Length: 468
Figure 1 (tube, rainbow, N blue to C red):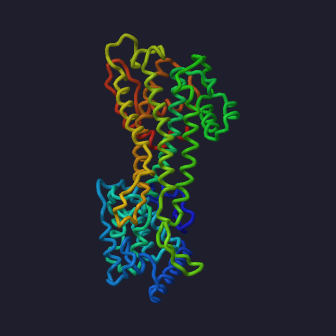
Figure 2: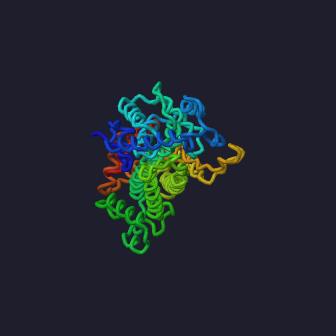
C-alpha cells in the first residue's frame, strides 16, 4: 500500500509502517496545490518588499537584517549543522523524514512542492543520511533538521525562505516520539502477559483481579487491564494463594491501569503533533499572510513523553520485584533460584536477579522529566530563552522501552521456570505465553549454562505477546 500524505491525517500506525515496514509514500494532489499557493504568497511578499521572519530577514538576533546574498538559504542550512553524538537509529531518520514531508504538505510554509517530493523520493528509495542524535533543545530540531535538509536538497537551488521551512520543525522529536510511543504501548501489553504468568507462578491470590474493582475505581486503564488479565488467566486451575501477597502482585492491575491511562493521553498528544503545524513563520493561505508564531514550541510533545516515562517506571519496578520474589524459596516454596531441584549448590537462575535489578535501576533513572529544563538566556541576546528538550524526552522513552523489554524477558524466564517446576495448570493465555517463551528459551535443567536471552528480548520487542 502507498500512504498518501495530505498534511493533516498522518497516523501513528502509518509512521510505523513507513519507518519500519518501508511502505511507500506519495503526496496528495491537494497538498501540492496548497504548497504552490503558499509559495505564491511568499513570492508576493518578497516582491513587495514586505517583512517576514526567515523569509526576507535573518534569524534570531539578525531578525532585522534584510537578506542580501542570493544563496542565503543554503548558507542557513550549512550554519545549522551543529549535531553531536552517535547517529540516531535508521527508523528514526525515516520517521523524521516522513514527518517533515507531512508538515510541508500542509502548505503552511514557504516551501515549494519540489522539497516535499525530494523527501518522499528519499523515503521510497531508502536513501537517507545519518542524523546525529544530540544538539537540539526542542525549540525546533535545528541540528537534525539541517543535516536532513542538506542531504535532501543536494544541489537543488533553494528559493528564499525555504531554509527556515526545512529546519524550523520538530520532526525529529516527533518522529522519534511516535516510534517510542508505539514501543511503550507494546511493552505495556507484554507486561500484562508477564504479570499474568507471575500470578500462575507464585501462585497469587486472584481476588485482586475481581472485575468489580473497575466499577468502583473509575479508571479506564484499570478496567482494560483487569479484562486483559482475566482473558489471560481464564481456563486455568483456581489456586488459593495467600490472603495478602506482596504489593507488586496485589497492585498489578492498578499500576498497569495507571500506566495505560497515562500512555493513552501521551499517545493522543503524539498523534496531534504528527499533523500540527510546527513551523515559524506560518503561511495562512486563506488570508494571504505570513505571520511569526511560536508553533515550534514542543512542550505538548515533551511533557507527554515525560508522563509516559513516569508511568512506565513503576510498572517496570513492580515487574522486577515480582521476578525477584519468584527466586525466593520463602515466598514460592520452590527451589532457591528456581533450580531443577532443591539442595543444588549451583546458582540456577539466581544471577539473572542481579541483571534485572541493574536494568530496572537504569530504567528508573530515565524517568526524570526533562520538559522543565531551563536554557541559558545569554544565547541570542536573551531572545532564545525557552527549551522543551523534546528530542531527549523521546530518546529516553525509547531507551526505557529497550530496557523494559529486557526486564520483561527476565520476568518471563523466571515465571516460565516456576510454572513448570510447580506443574501449574495454566490459563488459555498464560499457556500460550509459556509456549512462546519455550520456543526461544528452554527449561533450565541441573548443570545447564544460563540461556541466551536475546531471542526472548526480541520476542517482547516484536509485539507478538500483545496478541495473546
